View: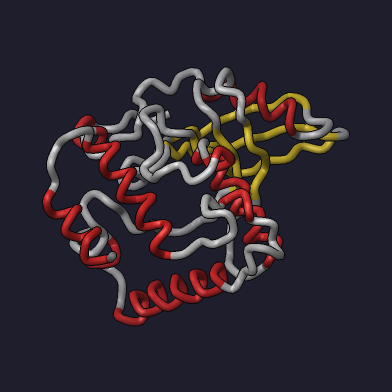
Length: 232
């Protein structure tokens, strides 16, 4: 388990430096959620700090035995932020952001309209890692970073060709269009809707405006209020 430089930690507000209990906790948890699994071992656990402002992301290798056969998978955990989600809670069913993510990913996977990782399981019990989380399979690749912004530094600036950048944008738009092609009623996504079946843009802007007021707690932010007024 490698140490992370303090200058990188400073740019990662959702990162918890002490993660020594993660390995043993995940071993015990996977032993419960994988049917018939025994001798679970966790290795190569690390936390990427260049990206991920909404949740802490934990990557690790898990090995286990089922019916005498040894299995090894690279997995990824997404852990609920300790100081609350970045976005307003639309309904009681969306109160836990990682629960929302896990459930939505399974809907998209079932629809087959956009690529999503295979999910392993969601854990609502905070006693396992200190907060709710879910685990999914790892997909190898390069991820554009948030700090510094991927358009200013990193592999997309230093290494990517114009064709690479074009492919990233078009594949992202294709995935977004695929998600928007899902009929929310057919997919039983009413649990996302706070508007009694009338999810208009105006209704959601009102929700975000109230969220801004609540988060500012009496402070002024003329830029964000001007932006909301312009959107209205």
